[in-house]
Image 1 (cartoon, rainbow, N blue to C red):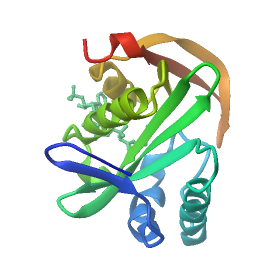
Image 2: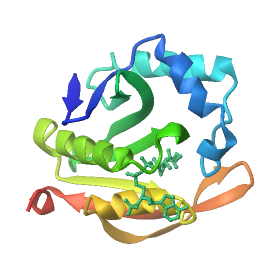
Image 3: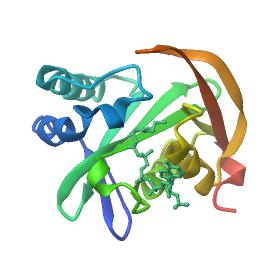
Length: 176
Ligand SMILES: CC(C)(COP(=O)(O)OP(=O)(O)OC[C@H]1O[C@@H](n2cnc3c(N)ncnc32)[C@H](O)[C@@H]1OP(=O)(O)O)[C@@H](O)C(=O)NCCC(=O)NCCS
């Protein structure tokens, strides 16, 4: 499984990706709004092992792609089918800080949403982010997702309960 545009390739994870993943997943800056991290080497290895295991699940729910830019692995984009009956999926993404501010996450989100509607034939795709994570809400707004509301105390992160902003897009709104 591979997704791509003019400058990015999103390919499925391979075992050795933990090394490049660890370069960013070990940084506090990257996981400040997340329930996990900063990762130890073992945690980064375990993440990749779990991703490879989940990729073999039938029916498949989880697709995690390595972001390849100028031949380097610089982040990850994830698609999860959350509800088969109601055709709903969720996207998420993470980029190595050395490559922030170049529009990469915006392109990754676009490729993931395309994948969800065109390949998986879903009806609704959503994403959540910490209300303080301005870069991530900018990405979701730039791709054309609609802010649908705020989920209160959605996640228990390192320093307590965290609200999430909820963004969504429907198949008939995409590519209009
Ligand atoms: C969120 C993240 C993926 C964005 O990656 P990116 O490749 O830099 O994103 P883009 O360049 O496509 O767009 C980011 C936008 O936010 C803006 N931005 C970045 N930091 C900002 C800040 N602190 N305040 C306001 N705007 C900010 C950028 O200027 C850009 O908008 P613009 O194109 O209108 O200028 C990256 O910061 C990251 O990996 N963060 C850690 C993991 C994470 O939070 N993932 C999302 C979980 S919901």
